[in-house]
Amino acid sequence: METIAAESAPGRIRVLSEKVANQIAAGEVVERPASILKELIENSVDAGARHVSVAVRNGGKSHIDVIDDGAGMGRDDALLCIERHATSKIREHGDLNSISTLGFRGEALPSIASVCRMTLATSPAGAMAGTELVIEGGKLLDVRDCAPVMGTRVTAGSLFFNVPARRKFLKGESVEEGHCQEAVIRQALGRIDVGFSYARDGKELFRVAAGERTEDGLAARIIGLFGEKAMRALIPVGRQVEGMRVSGFISRPGGERAARDHQYIYVNRRNMRDKIIYHAVNEAYRSILPRGTYPALFLYIDLPPELVDVNVSPTKAEARFTDNGALIGLVKSGLLMALQAAGAEGGAPIPSGISFAPSEGPPRPAPPMILRETMAPFAPEITPGVMGASITGSPQMGEVPAISPELAQARPLELGLGIPDDARVVGQVFRTFIMLEGGDRLYLVDQHTAHERVNYEALYSRYAEGRVESQELLFPIMVELTPARAELLRAIMVDLGRLGYALEEFGPREFNIRAIPRIMAGAEHKAVILEALERAEGIGQAAGFEKMAEPVINIMACRGAVKAGAKLDPREMESLLRRLAECKLPYTCPHGRPVALSISRDDLYRGFLRK
Ligand code: ADP
Ligand code: MG
Image 1 (tube, rainbow, N blue to C red):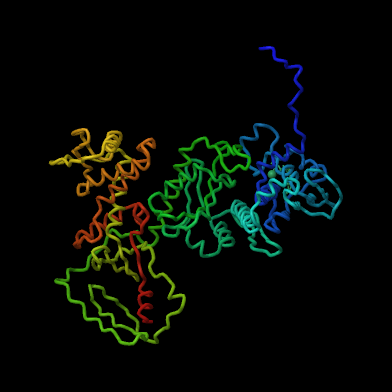
Image 2 (cartoon, protein in one colour; image 1 turned 135 degrees about the horizontal axis):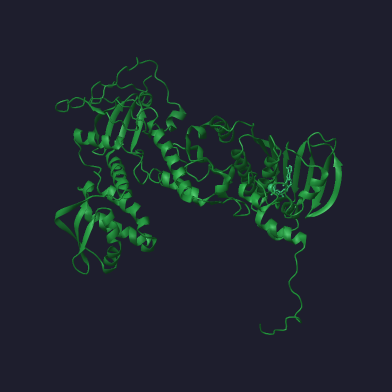
């Protein structure tokens, strides 16, 4: 070692005072009022509370109250709990491998206490008196007896009164309050067996009773927090593989939301926003989400504690899993099974046994429509047999109902799931939609979208199994490219081979398509290659073909699909619907456009002001 004047330099390193250390730790844990709530509620739940009652004022900035009926603390523990690294939850390092409580770092209370004015009142069950601590900016001002609390009450006021820089970063009252409410909801969904109530500025906004940790219990809680309507848009998930389990509720196809709210994921009862799990969710919903929509997720993943490390971030929002692959597989398959089952409720989404109306000979001209001159409510007669549609059992015409305001704004068209088995094709509309009549509904299937879905699934499963068969072309198709695109094509040529395309360089910028995927014989192959290159440019080649495969399959599915405007004969319509019936997720095209819409007979009758 060089001889630097080490000894003579004044010591510059100091051990931080307890108070400063706490404030620094608070920087990690206490970001805003909602983060205080999270920590306090976790403590209440860990203490075995049956009910946790939360109240905030001024968005939690001036006042937060968390009251529980848990185990409470005696005086010694109460004094200890505001010390750094004081925890009753783990004792030794080994315990970190099997944490079943929400807290364990022993940092929350001292951190919170260091940045606000806190009162903590607590007493264990049966105690004659309780202990009340008054702490200001981390300094213990008073310890006194108080009436028994039979649990614990923590009041955190004047947040960041002593850290003006942080106080400045707090948002407006309504934003902070929104976060507070969200924090309570997150905890409340994590522990169905604990009751919760939440009040804002003296007004109770929700109260949910302790329930059972079952599907019904969760459903009741979701209804209690979000209402019946939100619940109706959900379907149950339940899958177990080798000691790992995923359960809960997710959006039914077509029930997705326009915002990324209502997404709650719990791993071993701990709320997480984990990338791995979101990845698995995206995989499952990959091809059915309309653009700009997001599935609601109430997902509970239970793993043996030794397979997950939650001690990764101070807020514990992410975890490390021993086996990412198995976890992704579990979540993805659990969701896919639920989505498929949803389609099967009440008959396959599209039936396999569609029957066609017996050949009707040359189409009869539609009877002339007689329009009345007045705009008064009228009841047109529906002629049975028009286009083969027989509306049977039409009720007697009675009173003409007035159009109610809610009917006027109702959207009678619904994503047409559950087309019944005995549905029959009535015809093709606008050379774009296949029309079916089944049960009490009229269904319209978009021929292009449906075909895209069929192609997509056929291609994707073959690609995934590495068996997209090729078919040599008798006359190769020539493609001429810009030098940059030619370069790009050279780079992804082998990968396109895995999708069934054999390409051959023909000149510096010319290529021949020599073979095409057999199942896509009728596709516009040149367009597929050109569009694939366009996408490759957009995505960036560095992303690798794994990223590219999906968009290219989308392009192939689209370019191989019958177009809107193409006339289909009954046999073609039948075969398309049969193949659609075999799809795993027949609700949308790969970009999320709906495959089918339906309108109920009731809505039609109502529209025509029939009873
Ligand atoms: P941690 O939760 O990580 O242990 P905290 O600082 O949040 O750390 O809490 C410290 C300790 O104080 C806990 O381990 C627990 O023993 C006790 N404690 C905190 N809040 C409560 C409560 N509401 N009821 C009973 N005990 C509590
Ligand atoms: Mg804690």
